[in-house]
Image (cartoon, rainbow, N blue to C red; front, side, top):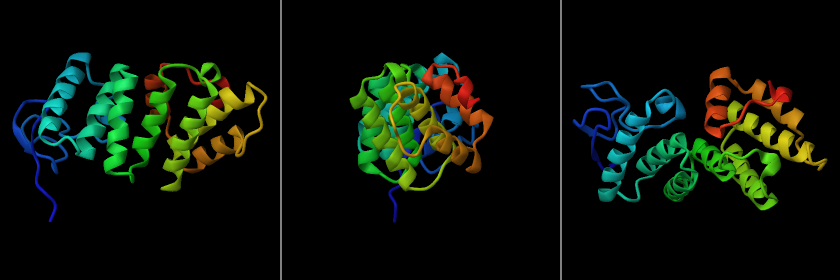
Length: 197
């Protein structure tokens, strides 16, 4: 039987259970499980959420969901190193969440364009993308892979397989949405390249 973990709602401070999707009082997400949950949050709310997760992690430091939620807050705020550390901790505890690998790879870019990123970092990003794709196809993960391959490999005239065009086609076949793309490039702090638009 899974352990019931009580938390403080990051939105209003009420006592909630971790298995609740949203707080019954303020209807805010209890545990951030996707970028959509926090995409439109103000900086003040992001700070409030991150402080709440830090406090809850003091009692539950190895909880994958809490580490992942705090990492997403850090990522949205642009604290790539802190976010990467928490995503990495979440992967150690639960290696079956493909989005965690995606966002860890985003952290490695740290707001840079792939073209200007050192090759060892690109290799690390590819390892995270491949790990995520081993769990199943995803439109946004394939799109991110297409972005890396187009902006790094194509622009540097390096051969790669699959090609960025193949990755883009797979992304479109796997339910890629324009919302996912705009949210991804918002956290990447880059414009969507014309070739991928």
